[in-house]
Amino acid sequence: MTGHGIGAAWQFPPYVFARWQELVQAGLLGVAIGLCAVPFVWGLHAVKRLFAAMRVPMVVKAALGGLVLGLVAWQLPGTRYFGEAELQTTLLDASPAVSMLLLLAVAKMLTICVTLASGWRGGIIIPCFFVGACLGKAAALLIPGLDPPGWRRSTCR
Image (tube, rainbow, N blue to C red; front, side, top):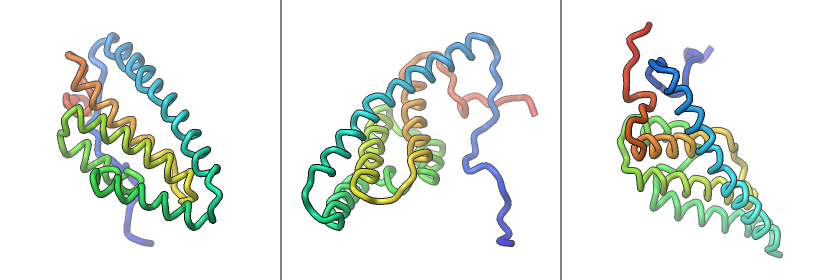
């Protein structure tokens, strides 16, 4: 009805594993980046406890959360919104440095925590995709020989 089709949200080039070792590399990288979720969950619980301990009306908590979100977005525009468009423009179409990728990942984790703890409504799945993409791209830049999707074009159709 709208004229919009259903399709992929992001444009990743196809990837084909050339050697079995690449699959092992991908698995190890997935585990390593998955471990980054541990401090994120700790941070989420800490920020929720902080906001729960505030004995102020919910509107004040939301305003404080909005202030934090606004300050972070002002300094790091890539952390705005939930991350769908930013994943394409900030990570896939651009080539940020490792330090910027790590900063974006940590800042996005903070904004997810503040959003959920201060009463704002927002999802967690797509923002976590953004964090994972930041960490994955940073790992690909730091680990020699790691071949992330998008750096090597597949010849298979």
